[in-house]
Length: 346
Image (cartoon, rainbow, N blue to C red):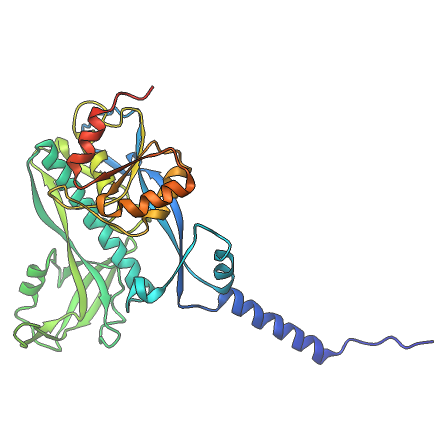
């Protein structure tokens, strides 16, 4: 009669260790790559509301996005078999920013894009407006900053020593009577919650003069508010989890459609991409080939693309054999003129 062989405990332990190491390498171990793929094509009407707007809109305006993922080994392996996936080095897109700083930068770009879209739409519609500082946005914090523990990228700086701090000039004024090493009370808004910190002022060197002055030790940007002369034309944006500046053109078209009589969409599903400035100039963007695919999946009839991105967009449109009309534009007027000459769909 043979004796049963008991499992070797050491072998089991080594096997489990090997499985754990493989799981870490394939799933959890970071790599220096990002994977870009087609994102979404989202209707912007629910994101934008104009007071006393013209409600007519039989079609829809859609912003297009790119899906960006921090790549693990498993995702890199799957990307090799995905014709719509693009692998790029993190450093090419993020520079020396960490994840939080990169995310904050994208939020800043989105807010700036919304402000520019409002200005461009007001100008196209002939509506008077003014620019007011809204709040100060924390972009990044130096790793060597003594105040790194008090701030996070994406914080809104609301008050210093109880006084509103809406722009760089106001902050400079509030700190002008202070000295390096003084402690100030700072009120922040972080993810919708109020945070109060006691912050010691650090030495900031003026790049032009080389002179030192007291400062907070963070990189900031002033966010602006676009205020129409007539409150009936006030524009409200809903919060989104989308970042970047490339929805500027589509935002502007939606706002302009709400500000003016009639339906600019004419019943069409209108997608597109492109930055915009207050004059209405449309600028190139990255990832247009992925946005073409995203718009096609949502059955867009028309896709507005910046003139400088047209060749890349056309190659992808031809490859996927889309029925979308690809329309190159250099400014807002090009897009408005194209839509105005279209007959109503159907």
